[in-house]
Amino acid sequence: MFKTELCSLLDIEYPIIQGGMAWVATAELAAAVSNAGGLGLIGCGNAPADVIKEEIKKIKSLTDKPFGANVMLLSPHVNEIMDLLYEEKVPVITTGAGNPGKHIKRFKEIGTKVIPVVPSVALAQRMEKLGADAIVVEGTEAGGHIGELTTMALVPQVVDAVNIPVIAAGGIADGRGLVASLALGAKGVQIGTRFVCTVECTAHESYKETIIKAKDRDAIATGRSTGHPVRLIKNKFAKEFLKLEKEGADVEEIEKFGVGSLRKAVVEGDNKSGSVMAGQISGLINEIKTCEEVIIDIINEAKNVKKSLTEL
Ligand code: TUI
Image 1 (tube, rainbow, N blue to C red):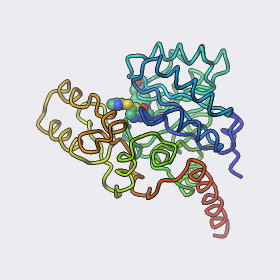
Image 2: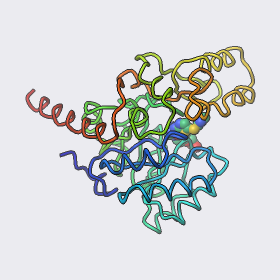
Image 3: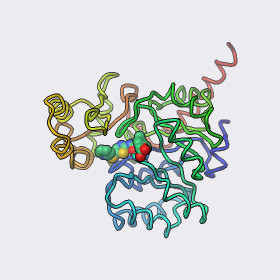
Image 4: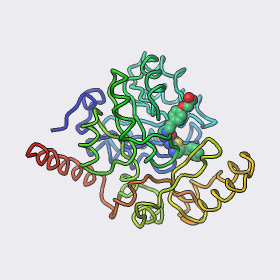
């Protein structure tokens, strides 16, 4: 059940891919998601290529299943990372925070599937023309760097505008979210925040605890004034960031304030002065599970939801 064309495209069992979260999505997390039948991804973030080369080595030792890497296009190391992923023939690449257009062609030649993450219909159409194999459509409910439109409004508009498979993202953490996404015309889902709160995720325990404690209105957006909005859990860092924006501090000063803040939260476990990026669905996440439990629970819940819908 729930075998869609995304499963055959990526050679995976369930139509679930893991968000490519910088610092959080290490080889351990990605391998656990792939081993559980989804598609795990290494989040390259701002890391240099030698660090990612080690992560690829590690994931190959942890799983025989397909996996991917997410390239954050604002990274200063984008070109060397793309060269590395090409040399290593990483089977799937997702991209975020920009337009990957110029990188797509050579990956197609070696059969790598390229799946840009986009926040709008226009970008989705542009990516399809440039040869993207599928598209992740990410609503503003997501954690981290976000667009403006909601998943509910954006997904069906993109589904109607392109012919490649659409993967819904932003605000999805359970079987209801999976069925809702399929109802909107998506062929699968990308899930980030739910996979942070797993046994295999190497993020600091206080990062996971902050998400587990979060309620519905705790995941807020900073950076709207700088043109780089980011969703994170409200804490001292988020409040100070918003204060700088309100005071009209210049963009350079604001951006400088954010440098290193994600690492501080994920690696050092500083959930006060660090940036705890997470999505609006944080309020729904109440316990740490294994990646396999997360995926099995989503599929079982989705089966029940599907059944109760047919009884309507
Ligand atoms: O990329 C993400 N989420 C991220 S990246 C990230 S690392 C970061 N840290 C601090 C500041 C900024 C980033 C944390 N979370 N999601 C995918 C995504 N991509 N959401 C929105 C977009 C996007 C935005 C603009 C994609 C394309 C785009 O194109 C603009 C253009 O070039 O036309």
